Length: 227
Image 1 (cartoon, rainbow, N blue to C red):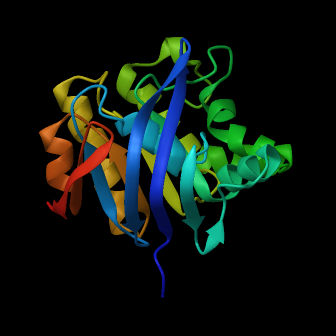
Image 2: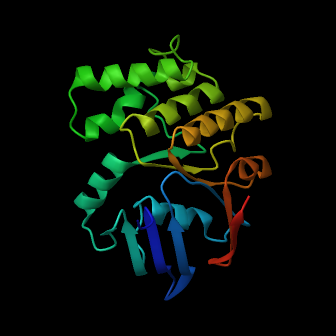
């Protein structure tokens, strides 16, 4: 059985003035179903760019990306959007919640894009929010919630479409120590339930919970080892 995710010689270049800068310089990576991977490295090393490619938010400039055996680097934008909607969930440091929407409507957004009916969307979102301890905040907007509560809403949104992979970019970066620890415990539960987690982080306490730590430097994988 092959890897769930396979990158081969993936490169990413961006235009800079009259030239180009290469952010990723030949990434080879296999991710198996159910792994918990932490991606670490100094600022500017290419961590977030790599996560964006893994999450089909950005296309490689060169190289190949297979998801569950499907070559996706040549998919059009609609096909990539369908892949993200059906198989991936995203958690960001800045939460990226819609300020005018309630917790339920924010958590249900991926189902709206997937074409689910309103009753199904709200039922699934409410169920997840209640499981995450937010049953008393269902109709609150982000501005009425703490940072930890907003991150829980973001995690509910990431899980509402039952994705195979959850990708997170510094998910505890804007949280205090206690709240960050609670969010990491939620990640432990997700991993224990068989979910594949890929987390970009600077925090050693995140890496300690992962089963595998990949360190990036200057756009290349410097090390890849069990935590």
